[in-house]
Structure formats: C-alpha cells, structure tokens
Length: 276
Image (cartoon, rainbow, N blue to C red; front, side):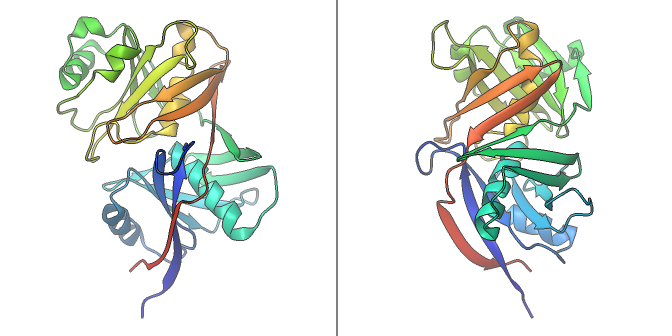
C-alpha cells in the first residue's frame, strides 16, 4: 500500500513568480530509503530535491537530505532556504531562528520577514587550483586559459571550484562544453556603481541547461574567495542563467566565513504525491 506524503515545490530567490530556482520538498519523508529518495529526485529532474526527516540532534528542528538527479549532497543552499520556508508554512512555526540538521552538520537559519539567511558551513577544501585542472576547466568553459584571472577551491561539500573572469560580460558570454563531473562557478565584477557587484553562474553535472539554476551553496562558498581580491563588505550578487532564472542574493564574508541571504517566494506550485 502506498503512503501519500506532503510534497511541494518552492520558488527560491524569486522577486516575481517562476523566475527563481525551484526546489522540490517532501515534507514527511520518514521511512523512505536512500534508493527511493534518489529515484524521486531523478523523477523531479530539478537541480535538488529535499527530504525532511526527524532530526537526531537535540538542537535541530528537523533533518534534511538533499539529492540531485544523480547523487546525494552533504549540503546545498537553495534547498536549505526553500525547505525552511516550506517547513515553516506547513507547521505554522513562529520563530526567528530555525536549525537544520544535514550531513554538513547543524545549519542555523535566521528569518526576518520573508528573508531567510544562513551561515555557510566551513569549507572542506580551499586554496589554489592545480594548473592541469585549470586548463581542463578552461577547455570545458570554452575559453582560453589566460581569461581566468584567478581561481580557488571553495568546496563546502559538492566540490566547487571558483574562477574569476575579467568582468560580468565575460561570465554572461559563457556557454560551456563538457565539464565532466566538475562543479565550476564563474564570477565577474560589474562596473562600479552597478546595482549588483558581481555576476555569478554555476555549472554542474546532470542538469539539462548550463547554469539554469542558482546554487546558493555556491554563492555562500564563493564569498570568502572574492574579497581576497576585492573587499570583505556585504555584496549584492546577480545570478544569471540560460533557463530564465535570474536571481539576486546578498553575500557577506567575515574572517574567512560567509553568510548568504535571499527572499524566498511563497510556494508557487503545490501538489500532493506519492513517493514509492
């Protein structure tokens, strides 16, 4: 016998409906196996699908497992914010601080009106990128190696590498080829006085269109890398994509750590479904 579980789709980072980054959230996933979660995530075919399960940490409000269509992630940003929004809406919880448990540990999330914010978990790998890998990344991005101004490992779980290009136009012009299993983020500064400081796009495996979504985990982990060349103040970041998703986020870096925040629109699409 199949069990009907609450399922919703949340539009994250959106200032207008259907312009943000969608995340699928199964709100009562207790009892589902890893195989069942992975199969459901492949069916939704979104960049991430999140499953809410009971926490094991006494300080956590809920635990979250996050999957791409092909693998489980220890942490991801827009599922963190989207699930928090869905959980608050479903439970009627009224509190300014929610704690999410995930494989990256406990993630505190702050709420201020419709804006949710979290501190990015510590990087599991940082530092300069090896030259052979940079050459591979340049080839995958279909640019000359000399167009990469700087690069850093900024891995908070998935394996992100950040590459700094000359400007925002260079980032917008990217149309990558085969990057294999690499998670690559491209960053370029906007001209002084622009509404946003940086243009950011992210490219990762098993997504139908390059940078068609806005990985908030990437935004959070890029933040400490960019100020090394710029500034440590809070910066508005514009995420552009090829799938009609254009998002604006705020990221702040302090002493090597980062925080990211963004509005989360109400769940524009809701449905009830059965995970088998």
